[in-house]
Length: 346
Image (tube, rainbow, N blue to C red; front, side, top):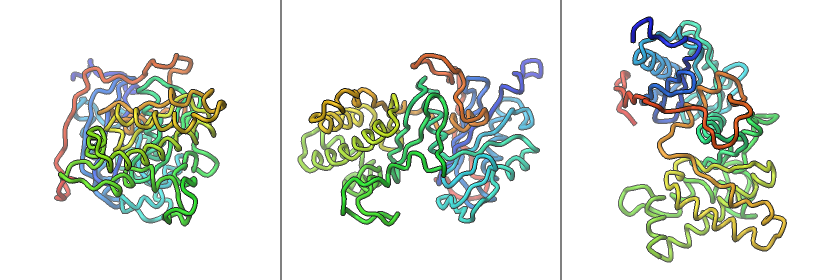
């Protein structure tokens, strides 16, 4: 790209989603994703900051610009995040065990002072899903290692007074049930999470337990049907909790299990319909119609991280539902970069 062809610098933003095994990154030019990238994560504070800086430089190089041409970098990661200071606490999956580690300021310094916004990964995914789907009121229900929801209410991210908004995985589902790591018994995430499904259905071929379970249930295998019914009932309970507490217009299923897509939605919708059947009030809320799934292959985490550099309100205020803001026209995937630390890719 020649200098004369460079886009307005203020339009360029990078979004990074740092997970325990990989970093997903995008370069956003206005409302269009131009480049995507994946890197293996290096752990510890220095490793995370170094991997993030590497990803930013690689994305900028692919677009023919420098990091200081960016309007900002958005970084999302697990752990307790303080967006106003850019600090992260207890991101144990990244081996950041200390409180209030200034990841944002450290990355900004590594990039020559580029503004860096730091957000919790679930909140960023909620922002990204809302934008990609063209919705302004939703709960992004992540079915992963645990269960929790990111909330975008009337176009604005809702973190809560103590940053715990959407932590529905620790609401009781089965009173007196199994002991949860939080100290309670019968928590929802023990039954509705991806890890709960993996524990209930052992893979027979080495492939995804969720994929195998849904296939076996579709084939009529009684054991698989029983496991799937219990899982779908727990997820449907999470959906019902979110609608009854926040009255969100949409509940978008995400996380690893969401790769099942249509069959997952069908199972959850059927379970919701069973749960509301005896209540005229619940039926009047049309809860089954609110369930959706995140589009396959769309990196909602880094998209939301990039959007977080603009604040916690979605752009495009006033546009109708169903009109997405971010586009993928001609996005170039840079692929999996080599791990320059010498670690094998995850």
